[in-house]
Image (cartoon, rainbow, N blue to C red):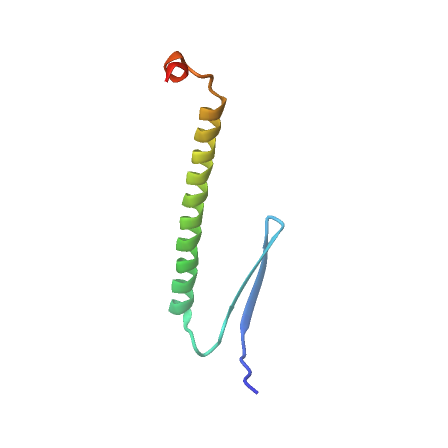
Length: 75
């Protein structure tokens, strides 16, 4: 049977639950720091995509709600 020992961290921040695990002896503190920075980079990418999606939705809603101008009616 394969078994692994894990160090598991749990943290509650602003009433939200977060977890992080790693194998002791396999990684060092530099590896942990690099992993956390990689997670941060992924979060930044997701945040940028969410902001872009919100801006696109707001622009589409603005276009849908604006009244048709004469040039649009004639065309």
